[in-house]
Length: 339
Image (cartoon, rainbow, N blue to C red):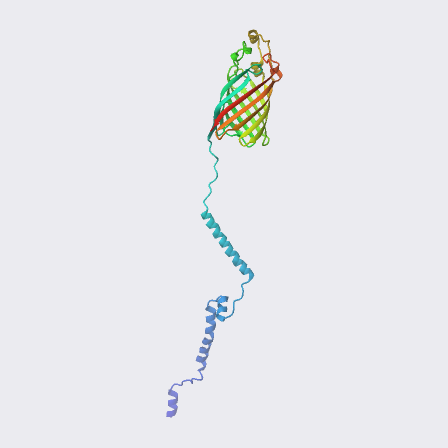
C-alpha cells in the first residue's frame, strides 16, 4: 500500500534521452522552421559579395549591361561638360548695325571748257570741290571727289533711296545757275536763262567688278524755264594700283522741249535783239560724250584727279544757230583732302 501511494504522488520526470512526445515534437518543429524564416527575411547580397564570401570569382557582366552602363556614364559626362562650357563661355550679344559717321573731301577744281555748249571759245573756270556724307545723305559741288574710292558723287544734296551691293537709287536737289547773257559775246541779245533748283532721280547698276550703267532724269523743280533732260551712261573702271583708279565713260543726253528751247532756241524777241533767225526746237537728242579720268591717292589724306572729254552735239542742238561748233573738248584737274 505505501509503495503504491508513493508512486502515484511523486511527479514523473522524463528521461534525458527520450523527450516527452508533445513537447519534443513542438520544439523540433520550431527549430526546423527558424533557419527558413531567417533566410526568407534577410536581404539578398550582391552576386559579387556572395562569390567573394564563397571564395569563388564573380562572373563577367553581360555585354548589354556593360553597354547600358557605358552609355549612361557617357551621357552624364557629356551633360556635365556642356553645362561647364556654357557657364564658362560669356553670352554673345546680337550684332548691331554700324552707326552713321561723317566723311568727306574739300579742295579745288579747275576746268578748261567751252563758254557754253556749242561755243567755239573756251574759258578757265575754278570752283570749290566739296563732298560731305553722313549715312545715306550727301552734299557735293559736282567734282568727282569722294571720301571712299567706291563712292559715287551725286551733285547737290542727295539721299540714297536704295543702296545695295549692285543697285543704287538716289534722289538729289541741286542749284542750276542757268545761263547768263554776258558769259559770251555770242549770247548778246538772248537774255538770261533763270537760275533754278533741279531735282534729279538717278539709278546705277553694277554689272560686274568693272562695268556699270547709270541713268538719270533732271527736272526744273521751280518751273523757271529750265525744262528737263535725261542721260544714260556706260562706265568702265580699272584699278591700276591700290591707290590709283582709271575710269572711262560714254554718255548720251536727251533734252525736253522746254529745255531745248531755253538753251538752243531763238524766239522772235531774241531774234530781233541778237540777229539770229527764229529757231524753236522740240524734244530730241542733245549730245554724246566720251570721257576719261584718273584718280590717285597721294597719301591717306590727299587725292588728285585729272580728266578730260569730247562732246558732239546731236539732233536739234546741233541744228541750232547758237551752235557754232558741233564738237568740243574740255579738261579738268582737282586736288582735295579727304577726312
